[in-house]
Amino acid sequence: MLPFKRILSTTDFSEASYQGVTKAAELARCFGAEVLLTYVVPAIPALPPGPNYAFDLPEYEEALAQNAEEKLAELISEPLFQGLRVKPIVGYGDAAKEIVRIAKEEDVGLIAIATHGFGGLRHLVSGSVTEKVVRLAECPVLTIRIHKKQLTTDN
Image (cartoon, rainbow, N blue to C red; front, side, top):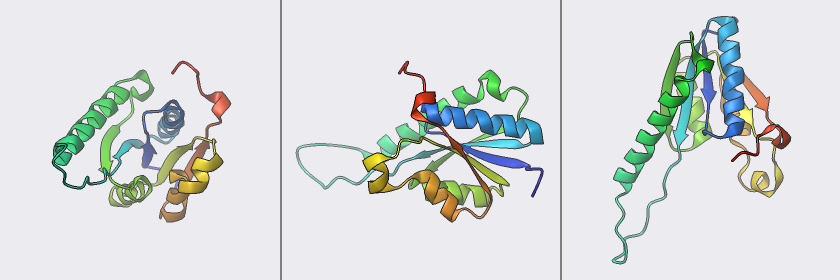
């Protein structure tokens, strides 16, 4: 199991997930591991057919995926990843299930995922992606707790 050769790190491009990615990059540097930087494009619910609107769902999903690929490439170009092997991966659908699927398919030794630490009603209604990953993953999962007070208020 140790040292980890591949670490899957997740991002939703938020400040909290960036802090988690930073910790994953530090771990990868310590272990000489490859980072699989992963973003999951959420599933878009299909709209019922109607004469009052036109919406090309496949085209929209393609645009979301392309945007995610561009953002991952931009993130990988930051000094944080200098000297590391980084593989960008864009998944599709349910975030937790997709993260676990990618981890298994890519034979990762560790999933490093940030928690936002907010809780509240949103957590009660939908649960957390992190909790689902912890329950479903076949490899170790490192949760990186990010408290609201640690986030910058620039946004």
